[in-house]
Image 1: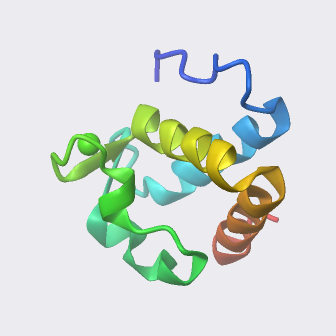
Image 2: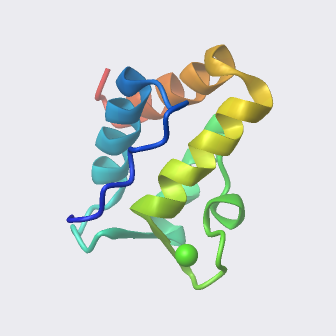
Length: 95
Ligand SMILES: [Ca+2]
């Protein structure tokens, strides 16, 4: 932890909390990063590792994860993002 990544003004607070919880669920080993293997079985949610790993270093950190959803939010709107989050939450039984 330690980075304040949820500062974007246009990221709705409630969504930000959900994104964080999903990231923690993905990060099974609590390294603060997610590897491809941890995200592979989420393909049905429409989120692919290559899109998340913005700097292409083989790991997705929380900044990249939040940034991804920020971009999505601007791209497809809140309703579509909530759908993706719901899928992931169902997968991790967070919902
Ligand atoms: Ca990365």
